[in-house]
Length: 340
Ligand code: SF4
Image (cartoon, rainbow, N blue to C red):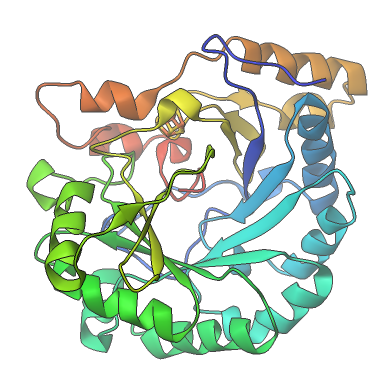
């Protein structure tokens, strides 16, 4: 039976982080040199993830997205995909990846039953990629995108976090690349979440600016009216090409947010900005009954009042959200731990 939170929002979507590790160091997510990592013994097994997903399903979840860190660093990920894809009640099973290991994994993921893939792609320039992600891996990412198409995934999405002075001169190039590979591009505003220790307002390229620049290039852009709780607002160019903008910083969409996050060690977070979560691993491993777990998840969602991005937008002075000294003490506050 589904439940709604204090703002009347149902729980529908679960982002499951399968690892906090990542093989890139993107400047907007992991700009530091050292990180505190989750304990290996604390990571949920695939069976435990399956149990928690099932419990969330009983509370209303019907969409699951696998994330990280970088989810393809988790060994045998297609095994988890196959297990989750066998749930008939799951309407949508998707994966967000940085694409570095995707070329090798794409066929197995497809065979396992994964429905959709989103690849992060912030630049098409190899030297820039290396500077922004601190790893020279653009060729692997492009090979991953190619593999996704070859093995027959439909609905490929490309996510680009755009920041002033880094890649805002590639708005058109990224869109044309997406067109060339039959993908839908989503521009993402730079967010001041935990982990974004270099965030400053001047670096944000707003949805308004993105639209203005694309209008200069392509002509009048139409918003697509569609009932959806998806984070992206979608638009159509005069030539019919569609794209999205996730304007979490300047136009937050907390009012319709139906997402919860599960960290790789089993902490349920109700918001990307939440500073505390509910540990589901401990009761699960202690043998709590199905009913007890279900009541716990229900109660947590019922008490949810989070609207982190709206609260941040309404602040007068805005800088990095969590001071570095505090981030260094709690891995759960990092964006790469909570599935971005
Ligand atoms: S900030 Fe929190 S409540 Fe708002 S959309 Fe993001 S996850 Fe949902």
